[in-house]
Length: 549
Image (tube, rainbow, N blue to C red; front, top):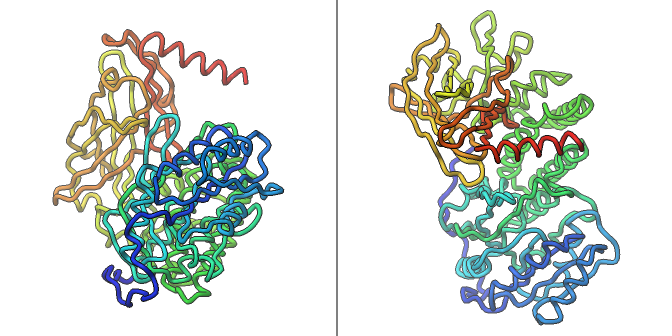
């Protein structure tokens, strides 16, 4: 991919557009919801709380049956800026109610908000000011995913929002295709209407992907801001999962592929060749990797259907698609899928799809010594690994936690990778444990790596499980090399022979610990710790309830 040009305007500001930097009432927020009475009020209130810049909030109820519409009516009775629009029948998706909102707003700018999310304070002012100062048709900011009930937050596509930027056209920043959300953006309403930009109608999953492609295809001027402008609530324990989280059925993947294919066609049809190529690359690096990590959790019929559908779509890729960053993990996963008619090597693919990627042994070679995926799949070449910097290689690091009464032990083993690891000279690892809920860390330690055989290096270090305390802890590792380079890695959890068995361990601090080493969905080592008798009893009761169900 060519380097991005400087983020400086190269076309004159439209003369007929006023400078909109002051946050006067110019924004309409479209809130959509269906049977979400428990949360829609919070969403609406967060939009109204943005202040005078919000001229109206249009709440589109998609024919709810749980009292959502009545709740909205009561809120509207005391708030003149709130207008409720009821759709006569449920659309089955998010696109149709958002289109209803586009048609209903009367403001120069429009934003979208889902009923189970919120706008953080200052979001509208930040986007409106940026759009006005840049004379931009679109302003976009940082979205954070907030896991509930833990409250843990993770930024979405953070590299796009490290500093303010103005893009005269989307092709200046091809990575824009990765931010497929519509909700962390402010749009000029006349821009959407003039270009006929709408969401797919009806039950069309991943409508954001298509809508975003249509926006980028129209070539808007875009302002980017580092401000937090949207809080995306992720409720994995909800009785009814959001459409994007409900990935257990093959029709979800089929819908995602359809949306990504349509987005590519939209961009290519508009002459946005670089963005179209970037969208295809995004499908491999994000979408394929995400579903490949979960493939081992599905049953055999799903795996066969996923493999066949993915394989069929990948046949549309051409040579330049594969030549772009050929060692990227998503491309390697996709090449294995494309070259094999049946599902294979799922545990190994899961590890390769992890972030950061791990390529587990065996490391096969052809008779002439060229590195390949496996002896029976030599057409998937791994030769580019011979020239890639060691800091970006998919290093395989095994880990085993051995809980003990006196001193628990963490055992690590780093694998060779076609001679590149030994060439770089691994000499130590930094280890720490990160709490799943709030990212606090414990037990940071540096330990030397020692050769263990001809093709691996190992280290052992004590773990103070009592010091970790209650909660779920993820293992983080950084491998340091003799030349000063380093590589952040996640450790593959060794299974079998009782390695991941739950154990009760005596503790001077807590009396007793219940320790459960386990492998995450991506195969990384993590550990759950329950402290004291109460913690042990709580875990036992939860397990009993699950067995009864």
